[in-house]
Image 1 (cartoon, helix red, strand yellow):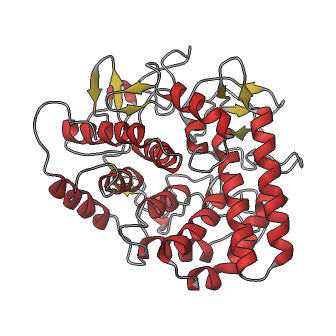
Image 2 (cartoon, rainbow, N blue to C red):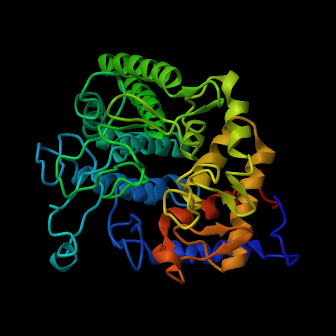
Length: 402
């Protein structure tokens, strides 16, 4: 791992303890992780699932609890105001009436997420693979199969194999991937197919096929395996920008590429959705100077005309985003590159004394936007998927010394 950057030695055991304490402070009575604090102190789909994935090697009971509670609130009906659909995994729940007043036009649980559902299938499979215990999947199999069916019956409404979103509540989230929001900050009109979500789809179909085959559900296994291969082929055909040797951010409602250079395609590595012949090009592009900083990878390239280092989704650095890329690098044998990513997050932690939801690199300066609302872009100081990201990377012997 790269040295922290200012010559001081960090006590990694102490950093790990601090991160573990932060996670414990977010632990719900049921055992899952609240998304953050002081904001987002509740159950989320995407956030809680990614945090559960990050902590599988540290405490698999978090994933167990997360999957079980999300299955409890899984969609059962078609309800446009909450964007609920059968099999869909929620975006966010608010349990107390007072907090619901902040979003009076939403019904809770609110389901406006395109990626919570495939992530649910992926994390269930990862829990079984990492723990060797199949009882959780056995218990949740109806929910896992229902989530998989949502991907093909509701997530792909036009039958082109891509997972797409288009809100049904006009006051809901316009963008429903991890770069979500009610405004059109991504500059695309729905229905939208995001690149990383197609990667999640490839992995979720593959995971469902393996879980189904193991349990004797041959029809599901065959259909899911076919869907995974078909989606993998489609995303590599329609999202690849041959002239830039990189993947487009998305296909918009007209099936046109949104050609911005972003961190989103980096997620494809962990999902094993990239042909071997393209992996080095993808990795090299992410490490170019307009994306790479000493404190991690930006979510949007500085060379893009709409880049703003303070913008949540057009220039910031998100630790969970970097974690997904680092884990993908390790899966494909890029150990030194993964060390660079892990070292950059550790350097950010050392500089700020924390690892918040996101942060900013403005020129050569790291800006902690969780302690000040610089340009109005305030970040949450404690976020489960940021804490879990760094804790997991610092717990991997390939990335840090014993």
